[in-house]
Length: 69
Image (cartoon, rainbow, N blue to C red; front, side, top):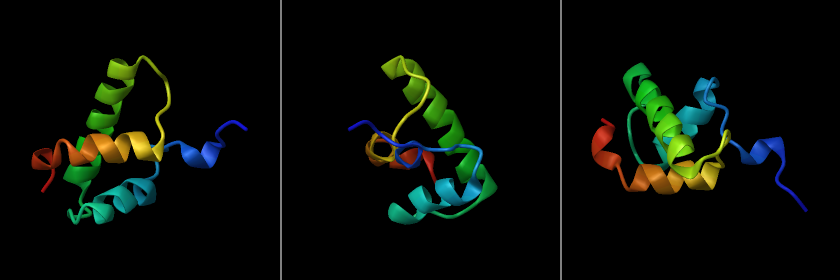
């Protein structure tokens, strides 16, 4: 069975980005959300995909916590 839309991050939804910020104990701020959007675009380019899963972005965030406040 394939992945559903719910498995992918919607970077235009602040609440989805806030969820990932809370998971790593970072502030829910516009600056952090913008940083996550940038990180998401970078990850998409590295993986050569147009959409990324919540697990993929979470793993990427864990490796770059210093980029978030």
